[in-house]
Image (cartoon, rainbow, N blue to C red; front, top):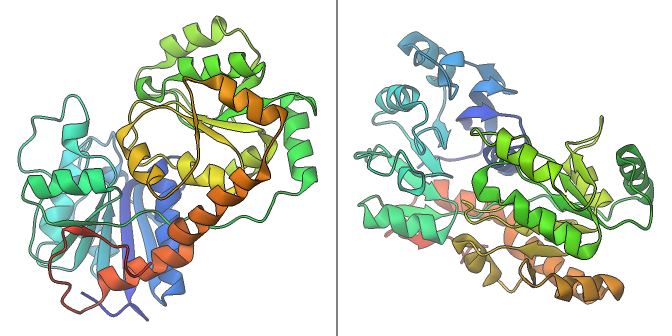
Length: 360
């Protein structure tokens, strides 16, 4: 496709530089591409990016102009469309990009797809296709759905930076800012508040553990009234958002347990983040979780909080060692770099209906 050393790669998305999964994993690709010698520019409709074109934003009324796209993209050797041609929340922007990039090397990375969301599941002809493009799914489940619809694709799992074990002062500082005592069990749900994240189940886990529930993300997609109702009736104390100066690495350092009770995730970043940060994870049942669990992770079931309560009473560090080891081996930045080098090389890959495991 291209030779990466010295190449100009431009990554485009609806929004970047935020706490959502697309922003987080775009940063992973930027890091991995830099390691491979590429020059990387980011372009988005809102948030924090090297270039902002408002017409690319989810809620934009008009798509970007040809002149805007030419100025931002025409010097790129490769353009990565990160979810902006996947879930058509601004279809005009996606169509403008697809037209502008026709016949040019591009990677369409799909986090969310139309058939996964109510209101888009009857849409035909999306994602767009072009012989010069490669389609990348973030899970085997999504890859199989793409292939079933006649779109050849590969799976490239995410690549997370490894964090050194958190310094005690980081944990102490964040817990103090939250008003959490040293003996309190802090249950972190590092997600947005929308219906499929099952905040009520997260609250129930915190109650079963006698802990404090901490939801870091905002309410979106009209979920605020339901969230307010749930939090008002919570049995245990609740914390919202990140304290000033704290990032998600600090949040993981501060917590004792991570809960991901979702009914659906395109991937589920806490599956790997919790392992990298050496925190026990309790999860709900969603399809991609089974795919990632097959690597050998050991997690707790949200429907059996007693099991996690017993572990907290007598923690076994071997479980944390085990999960961290698997995460570093299969989901580290180095593994992602090898996958991208294979994906973007100029050679003939043959059938692309596969997961890129062999090189990792």
